[in-house]
Amino acid sequence: MPITGPETLHPLYAAVLSLLQDTAQAVVMPRFQSLAAHEIAEKSPGEIVTVADREAEEMLSEGLLAILPEARIVGEESAEENPGLLEGLDKGMVWIVDPIDGTSNFSEGKAPFALMIALLADGETEAGWMFDPVTGRICHAHRRHGAFVEGDRIVSQATRSERPKTALGMQFMDEARRTEFAGRAEGKLDLVAIPRCAGEQYPRLVLGQHDIALFERILPWDHAPGALFVEEAGGKTARPDGSAYRPAERRPGLLSAATPQLWDQAAEILFD
Figure (tube, rainbow, N blue to C red):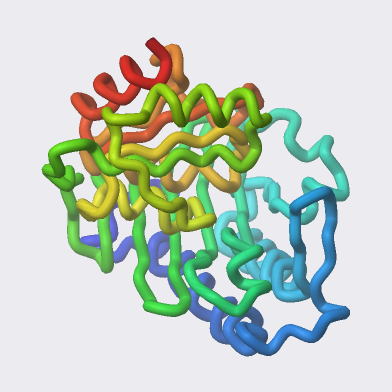
């Protein structure tokens, strides 16, 4: 099925948006600030999952299979149980599903959190959706066709601060690396708090709220939609060595910035 920009409301764009909205309304928001203790679990050290994550992934997966039957589906929770699903992301059509990005925030009864979907074609992110169910904001990108917020095309904006506003995602680094990056940034970058939600962090780069974001752990459901969104808006997302981001790769480290110039500036400061 060919894809066009959302300004024409192609059936694929509209169908995925409708699925995200329906899932948020039916499964996610009814449990926001209403989770019982037994509905929250730690699936791995520091990693939270809720009953809403599992039910949302099931609903999204069923809906995506109906929208594009030829594409296989890789969801965060299903991949947690079966890591083999992550093999072959560079082959064919693949839906990547993050049922609730920012689950820690969600489980604590606070925003931000997002429902995110990406469509891969032979390893390239072809399209991505990031839906904030609290505000109703939808961010969408389509490779070579642009980035959109609420259906309106958008161009990335820097904050124009004296020092670039920078969110360093260091929670998955060891203490030595955290100390190293904090030292490199001191006096050169204006460090701001991370939102603990990639579905919020990437839009902040495009919307002129942050200039730079550094990520350590790179899982495809966390980064495929947002990396494309920043790129299509005119920003830059790449590995620390400058190589392109590919969702199938598992090595750590990703730097994203509102403009290519800010990316170069951050890379020089953080990676020398």
